[in-house]
Length: 474
Image (cartoon, rainbow, N blue to C red; front, side, top):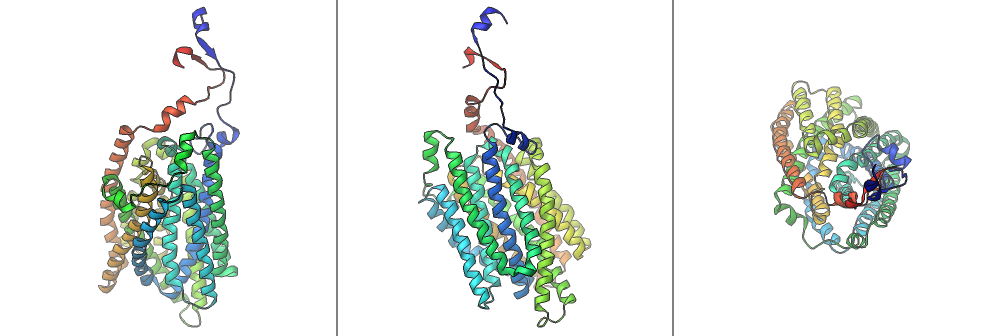
């Protein structure tokens, strides 16, 4: 280095760019300096929430299938969509009056308190299977949607693309362990014991959200802190969706995806109920045995596809995102469905359908889910909370309504399971077409609206050990 270069160059002291925690996490995702604690807490929050959900999901299957059957389960989905027409605007109205942390924690604690009511009703002998099925459907889409909206609000687009796969690992791990716990506890604890455990986990989720918000806001500048504590604008979720083709395309994707998924679950439920009836033919004296059989089957089933999803989420999603981005990842799910339902079309047998649904759901709950969450990164805060809640809640259940009509018509006409598989194949083609539209628009928005955090990250970047920076570049 000559004399002039020495005078015009600043030499920084050695600074470690990442902590040990961040170095460890970087094996699973591109975690950078200052991001480790926050993303780990977010993953832990999703871990607790999905653990609670999969306990409740197992309880849901036990109550609805033992008290109603697979057809009642399908028809009840229509009731969920009707209720969500009221719930989504109410959620939006609340979001316009409180800040994000009060919104997320308040809704979570509200659902936790509802479980006490179901426990009391069940102990009094009420047949609450349909009501609980409706409730779980609303809880699932609304509470999980708002937590991912919270993550979308915390991270910039480029951060989300890098960190969402790791956040999703927490969800996959929680789903797997929640299903394992449910399978092992359903006999000794019963459905109401699992409800108690889930309520405690939801209370922990609310406390964790407050902690994450404080940890994140403390690192921000004054303007960002002020923004975090502001309520959202008055625009409603449905209004946002119908005036934005991108959001409307996401809604269409969710509808088709859920029709296909509900179809597969219906086929599986029919086969499980039939097998339980064959194993325990007396519906009166063997009702408890049927409940235990169904509960153990679904506990094991959820456990297997969640551990497969965990492997995909931990080791493959971040690499898929890095290689083809969230837009390209949208095509993985429909490709698997095309192969799976083509096989079911020929051989609709319980062991085979179980394996195919494990593969289908494991990719859906890892690759497809994370890509779907990332689609909201290049949108407004209102879209992240309100439009996302409307899409994940109403439009998801609207897909259930559409398929409930197919189930009713197909059952009336004596459809075999292979006929339902054929319907799914046709719908999957439409799924691929919408995925192509979304992938193109996501890429366009990324170029038109460059990541707002990129320049800030470069400005605040910590120099690497021993690096030199010319004065003219400062």
